[in-house]
Image 1 (cartoon, rainbow, N blue to C red):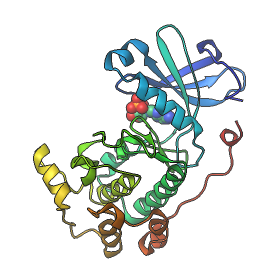
Image 2: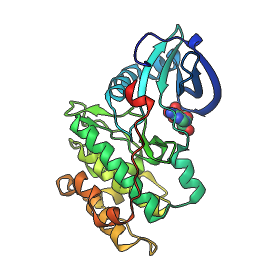
Image 3: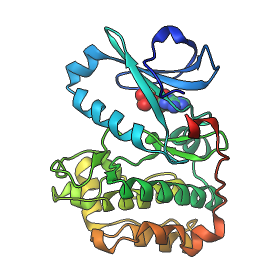
Image 4: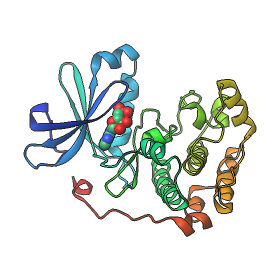
Length: 279
Ligand code: AMP
């Protein structure tokens, strides 16, 4: 079992780098005994300390390692040596959604509706476990073997309710009005974010994008956005019900999953039970 014991770096063969983040790199790896393929994120303690994010990382590890859902990237375990921390992560073979969106420019109804069903189901599970993600955006979404969505990066997530709920965090384009206005917020921030995500997937850019920070803020708090002609009526209906200034008016996640446009286009398939479900 991957959870079973104290691991160390000698027990893995390292393969190609998968990517580089702010505090370190991610490598493809395989454990020497069972030949289990995984991704290992290597973080330098000195850099984490310099940036003062040890607390955030500890929370990310605590939260992500507890969650078990087919659309949430598993964090199996972690270990450290004198200078580094190693996170043992589920490998997402199809990489970042962000890169795929750049390649395709925009996604069709089928792909977008499938993502919407997957992310809504994953967030429903998070919220039921009192976790708010707070940083949903294409850069934090990875893709599994069959292209299924995997929420990664719980760096900004919190156990809800949290005293830190007034903290400003997340990326500008995806920030909900209540966070810009510095008001308390709850799990409905994630519902706003999937509205922004749905728009960006179909259109190719986020709905409140402008040249300047102030203009984007202004547009978000006024919920000032337009649909290009290419967006279908069903998708417009869903996005409009998610991008509501009043958080209590946002469409509940179960109704996103059962929304007629999602029902009509989603081709979600649940992955078969794999070895990672039992480790
Ligand atoms: P991060 O430090 O989390 O931003 O990761 C840096 C990059 O590595 C990401 O942008 C991904 O392209 C890649 N990456 C991270 N984790 C994984 C994973 N579990 N599977 C595949 N690629 C990953």
